Image 1 (cartoon, one colour):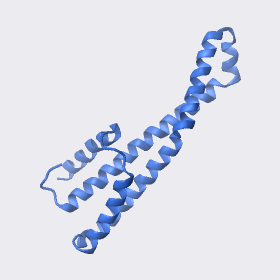
Image 2 (cartoon, one colour):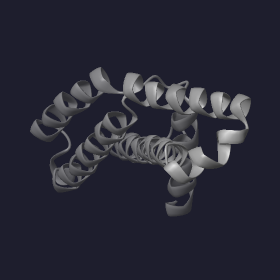
Image 3 (cartoon, rainbow, N blue to C red):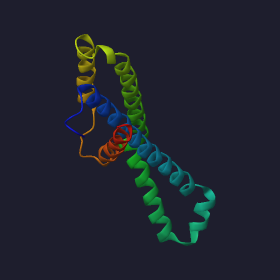
Image 4 (cartoon, helix red, strand yellow):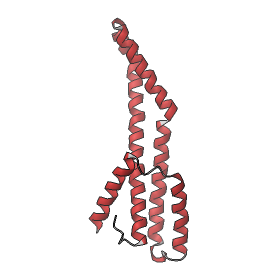
Length: 148
């Protein structure tokens, strides 16, 4: 991101970055949750268990993996993480819309209202060294460069 951007452009870029970050994180956790659900459902199906009856060692390993995957899902709450990221993505989208309405009044009261929102977002944002953040930054930069 260039240092020549105005305050308005920097704020738009930041919100765009946040929206894409939370979208990527939500998709990841949603896929992880669904994948674990599918593996658990197939692995615990009676037809699958019947096939493994002759292979006790393999059945033991698969049972352990299914139990481990289910425990990971229970412990880390992938569904809850996906929901949280969806909520934060929606919040950033609403801030983008609010910012566009305050565009004409960016100095003065518009600036103050927006800084309160941005400071609140800073308290709940993920660290900037995550894979999702870096990928979202690439997307946001591409969009900003495409606009300019």
